[in-house]
Length: 192
Image (cartoon, rainbow, N blue to C red; front, top):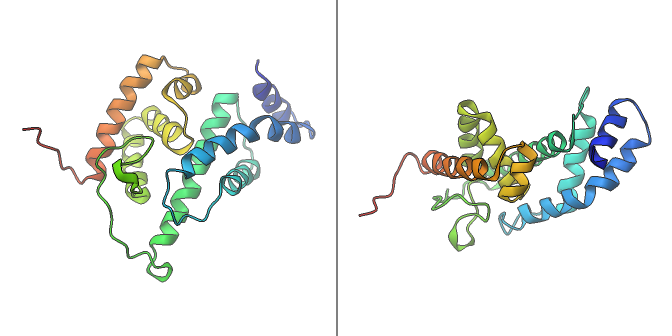
């Protein structure tokens, strides 16, 4: 049993000291993942990695009855929390009273780094497409969340999902094609 899983079990059993120990055990990794994710966001995004981690932690810790089985389950929940935070902030930016009447940008290629040219991915369109993917296959959607919203590599995400790297590669290729199709409005590129 790794340290995070042990601390999660202690937290679930009601050990009050395990919360502080858990924060110390996961904070660095969560902050690294948040920094990687935010580095690919809009330039005018004011959210800092530390703030994203803190807000995600507050949501995780504030969830009544929240219980995580192991490291994998915890980081999947953290990915979901970060995703929701970023989507909520994007929705707030989109409201006209917040100056959100900007032009949507086409997604040339869904990748962890975002589209070519450093343009920001339309987070709302991505979230909607991700919801459709989750309705079709929740585990593939979880892979996208782990890759895009927490910045995990294919091997890291495969470990979290307890699947082989080859399976993760196949799922990632499928998810990218699915999301591109959804975000681009069903347009397909004609190779010739």
